[in-house]
Length: 91
Image (cartoon, rainbow, N blue to C red; front, side, top):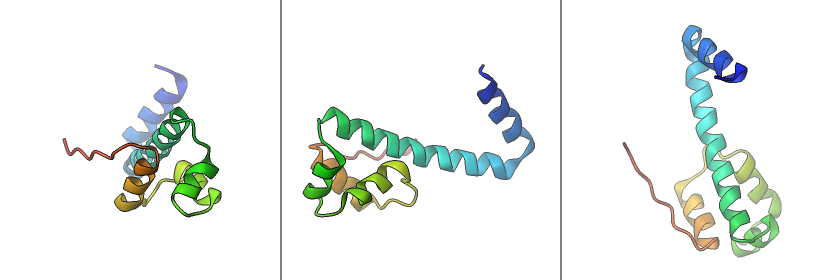
């Protein structure tokens, strides 16, 4: 286990608020990273996706870098612009 993973695990064990906020923040971060990876694999720039969504490049950057509180309808539009679909799963 890396030093960072050890630190996070120890901090989560002793600080429930940190644990809750870390998990939420990490989930938001993963969504943004996933969207960026899909966009890049589709060979599109942020500007090209913005044009397809009739918005600004800065809005796409915000989605990819700060995906907290993103609406499902926005995710669906983003995915559609990339020729993809959103699939939600509750486990």
